[in-house]
Image (cartoon, rainbow, N blue to C red):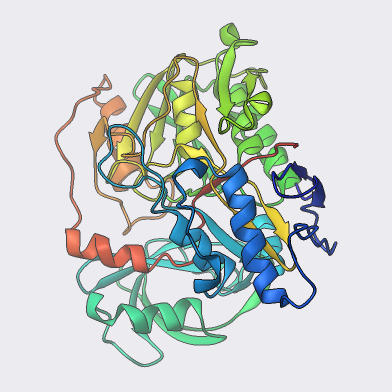
Length: 452
């Protein structure tokens, strides 16, 4: 796991501090010299949060001189308040929707892919039609055999499965230790399953397979997070792409529709597997900090992995595809024909951060932006689609009749892929809005590995 990053933050108001983002190591940032002994720990924590942000925040110049950190309850509340001071040319509203803070123990669990719940995510396909969106294979739900696409008919005896009852659904599915769920499987079979929350390790590479589509050999991989056990992720990348090469894959589909981002380094690894070897050594991206830290701006070049060489790649995306997912798309666009397919455009997050430890918290002020070879990187409104389709929530991963993946398969089976196709099934905007609330644990961010 990538837990050993070290970050050196030079503060204007204090001496440089050395901190480690390593699990199970307690690190306390050096308090600024302006502190006096009678100040409480809470006061110091909030004051330090603001001082660090005024130094490293990408839009630090826009933070008002009179901003009072003590008026906010927690470091997370401070981070969210600072978001309103992130104006960018060409955008009428502040662009930062992401700066946040997390308790260190909680973040260690999130960033390593360690979870303690049912391992079940749900979305509405339509009003009154709640479906299993994703199941973690190693989780209680995965071990119980629950599959993506199953319809949930009742929760803890209640059949009130409507968008108006979203709070009940969130509480029962994501915040409870036990649940009794009644499912309708494909074919109309009804099954009741009791779940008990338990610890498990996430598996970001959720599915992979190869398909014959017309004259094409199409490789398909579902990748749900750039966070997790990176040793496991890299082993899966190697296995999947070696398999694609050995089976003669000449078209690639990477499913990022629920991938909210994660480690920039994992994005680099995946980009290196996808890029054609003709572009080995060419510029992948440039990372840029605020004007105090331009000396830390850096560029990354492609270092080709594997032997798969393609001219085109398809990404299945949605408004849940964010940050490192969008970074991957942006970095490949200057070199490949990148086609985006799915129910909606991407989230729109071209910036990132890294954890700064303060007492028992990590703060994450947006600290850098990234541009590709062509200097493109202001995609705050997300990337638009080449083909709009339904989300396919009524089908499992890899089903050739599933809305998004099926649209690609069917196009090749017809003989040619067309980059412009009729609009598929669109989700009701009201249902889409509720689905956002049914995604409470989804992380959306790009985590850097910068050394200061």
